[in-house]
Image (cartoon, rainbow over all chains, first blue to last red; front, top):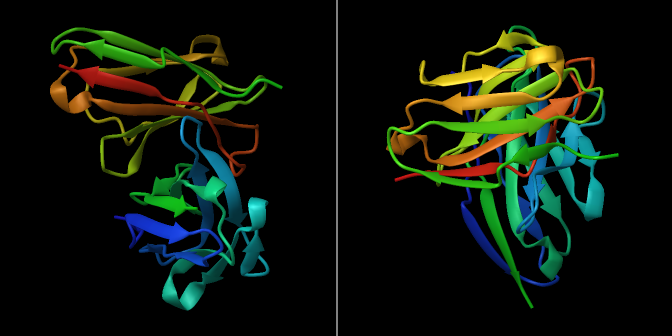
Length: 115
Length: 114
């Protein structure tokens, strides 16, 4: 069965530190990849997505992610985090062809940014 | 434009009772999804409606869960009878006509079964 692994469950950073959250998936076919974020008290919202083309994807709020097909990875990065980036981050995968339209999520990473 | 809304935001019930969760998708979105997150675990897919038809219900845990989308607008998810392991956050999402589009999520309903 397809799975998505997020290696870091809790991350604590100081403001201005760089961020990289890992995401690996197990499906060998064509996929769409997503990062969602849930800020405290808010609903899940899309940070960025990869469908095809340039494997380096830029999203909102200065986030970016790189799709490395050979490593089945889609890591999320931000060069300098802010206190307002404190949230839970979810990687998700959609299998193309035979998988329907459902998203398969990782377990999430809680990011806390300290002042 | 209003986003996806869910009602109630919280529900606390006793084991054996019935609970009905409601989701109102973004107006005009044909696709409606239900997901669930049990505490500490991943968000898991439950089912997908296209208009009023169930496109994929492979994630429904058992026959105590019944989802409907009469008229292709709002959807309900009924749990009857509820068990302790049904506790979690139930998310609804919707997307426009073409399936491979971004899914917009609602705020979720936190269900606690005592």
